[in-house]
Image (tube, rainbow, N blue to C red):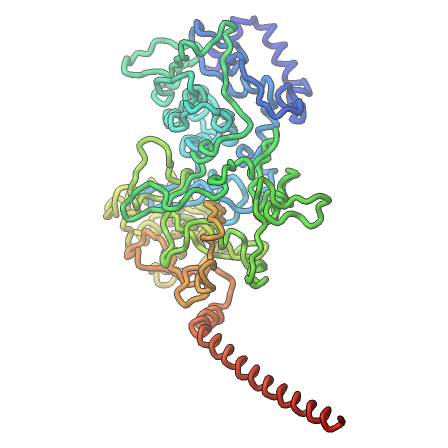
Length: 640
């Protein structure tokens, strides 16, 4: 198939011409120089946005015209890359996760792989975040990762990483193409940009067609997933099965102008709705409504957009916004784009920088300084107002919010719990609100190190054992029993399927077979700890911040910040009854915290007693002052 594709191209250009051209491109320094500034990367000082009437180029760099046969999708790498340095952009935060040389920074939201057949819920990331696992550790190739999560990826990264593809996937990728960085996912200002359609194309393995299908001037029909392994999208032949529809592009009739160019309605200031497709979250309510329970972030309500705080230059080094980010980021605006940097400014700055974009400078009158030493700004201002029982939430990345055909069940996996206040693992030691998941997966234990077992292996053995049990509902945990875990672990052990001793992790425990009693035992292990990642949005205004009513918002015996319930999510029956107190996720003394909270019960009385005491003391002092004045008066009269 590779030869057939290339021969078709060589027939058009001639073998010698093409070979020389490819050699020149491969050895040219400009072809690999990520610092090369192209036409679109050099600003002219104007804040106006250039008009983008440009030709569409396919992945071979050929111009696309309405009469072409076959009519191919345009390539972002070639079309946008003719004016913008694609290689430099690919080093940006949204696209560089698969690059091991990139500093991981503060732990963030992982990609959560869920498999109900094997009672698996495991956080994945190509970044080295403690508590996450690399996709290849569960046997997931970049191809499979892209197919599973590409719906809400902006392309690039794993979507273009094909070195680790299996044999069959190499052929499938030749049909589907690579998932290039989709500039339009963010920069297309046209309301016709349809990211839900982008997700449909990913599910159909139409990777090279996804960007074209999601824009407003083209549509794509057919599926690369259903194509035979010998199908050639560049030289398509008639298929034997008439029911199979190959990927086919249709461009809008008036998309091309008289120069065969297309207008792209792109802009620098990305609308918040573009960010929302991948970065939305909503609490699961009793009515199973998907509508958010909280107001929109106060910054957006005030007229700002996401990129006002989370911007970046042509290198796309997107600002994440946490205070220590300057240690791993080269973006000069990082220090001024955190909560503190924007609202309070930097003391060492030569010019006043507080109040960026109209940000008010908070006074925090009456709040003891210790709060700013122990709490992040987000602890009081961000996320859903804490409840006595932490909420279950859904996120775009984990639940596909905004895509077609998703389950709206309140019990659908993965189960994410929020907000959970914790300072655990934070380098600054400050308490912050977090999202939390309890991992559940099958693994091997060797020298206290846990290594997940390949999903394919787990499905072939464990899946059959669990299949005979009860289900808690479509998309929810299976009703896993201790007997099933025992049977599965013994089967894995007999077939040497795990690296070390087979174990199962769920609900914060590591389950293994005791060597002496052969019984199932549960022990503590770091790999079984929940994975937490900080949240910053939606930001609540000062009038809705914690403590605005009184100190009892946090310092009472039932305050959710310290004493709220956090469910221990687990497929192991009986479940939904276990929970932990919020304070267990903090490195603070629970006895002292509870006693301190109890003191607030008597504080009103203490204030009354203190005021009354002060009044008595003031009366006594006044009485003695009057007596002293009388004595002075008598002395003065006697002298006269």
